[in-house]
Length: 344
Image (cartoon, rainbow, N blue to C red; front, side, top):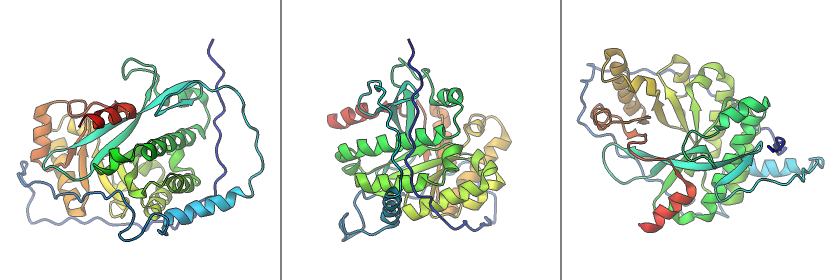
């Protein structure tokens, strides 16, 4: 018999007040349109140092993370006692968690550099059905649709962040010896949640994880439909020190305003564009334009769902920095990631 859905708890955190991000105008000037095939390799990316600021220990470091986390702790002093749900939880293993009666598991998929070696390893964190034999199990999006709870999206993303930080705290050699960063997809409800940033700041401080090791992927759709919310979210990431990824990027004019943010480090192309770029001129030109604009702005450009060697080679030739797809790296559970690292 299926258990009744469990109520997800939301910690009472202080609202993060941030100033609005000023609008930015992107102006690209060029004497000539770049040729389709670019042999010049992308600029080498700086290596992520997993430690804190030079010459300063983790306990001595005073950052925006601590400021937000301390503010969050002060707010907790005024929290009223809340009901504690003593309903037995479903069994979950390492990197797994229960959400509305379903067990999910965190997986990591690496973004593969198209040219050059070394530098920081980049991973996207994915949420998968822990009991499915393949990727087509119960998706978290399906659960969110079924519960009809506007706060469920933010609750899920909080759990994902917390579980990731717990794993990072318990497996520091994995991402410190080979410097790595991890990005988490955030939904529209999370972007609109004014308390999410203070939760992240507090969690980073509690688990002693450097903020630059964590990032958040914002879909371009949110940039179009949630301009004010995205403004606040990106500014909060700037203060905390987490990086931002613009996902499913198509060069929409509403997303231009964040291209100059210090938090923005990556743009991920909409796979609908790259899927037909080798056959149709307009998508082809758009891919080349985004790749060249990214170089001017100092951003890394990523292609998703790369499934053939021919597409990978063409994307590398026109100047993209990373590719992501089953052809290059299969998503692995965090437990499998630890096991693979131990074999090296």
